[in-house]
Image 1 (tube, helix red, strand yellow):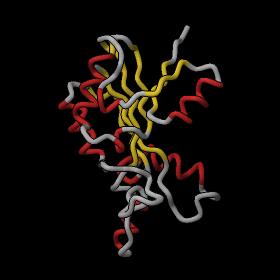
Image 2 (cartoon, rainbow, N blue to C red; image 1 turned 90 degrees about the horizontal axis):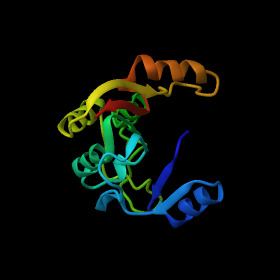
Image 3 (cartoon, helix red, strand yellow; image 1 turned 180 degrees about the vertical axis):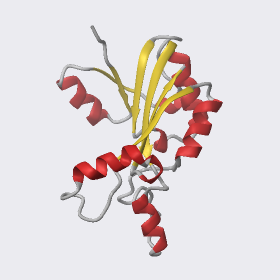
Amino acid sequence: NFEFHIIDISKRQVEMAKKKGYNAIIHDISKGFPYNDESFDIIFASEVIEHIFDTSYFLKECCRILKKDGLLILTTPNIASLGNRINLFLGNKPGCIDYRVENSPGHIRVFTIKNIVELLNDAGFKIIKITGFKVNTYNSKKYGKINLKLGDLFPTLSDNIITIVKK
């Protein structure tokens, strides 16, 4: 039997989660997690860390609230993705960052696999698996399944980095 806890800074997102029956609270995780030490078996932090100013503190907090041998599943955009490399080569900005506040995805940090592994190791985690979520190639609709497999085979070129780590 699983018990889910959802934390978001957005009142709208929390209300949507509660309407679906989830245990959700509004909280700014940059101030730490409102949970006791060793409270969780698994933490799923998808597309969160790139919005955090103090990433080391965030990961130490994840480690604090995970039980012994608990898992952290972390996803984040990959600044070194094939698409971002092509954009830079052509003189354009990478898709996962912006130079204006208006219409920005709100990312204040960007990562490569090497960077994220270093942060996770520094926070005391053991790397279990590193993979990627799709490599955008020409005609993504036609080659969707191939692009997903390429993300797994070549995570350094994938659009998103997926890490599974153990406390």
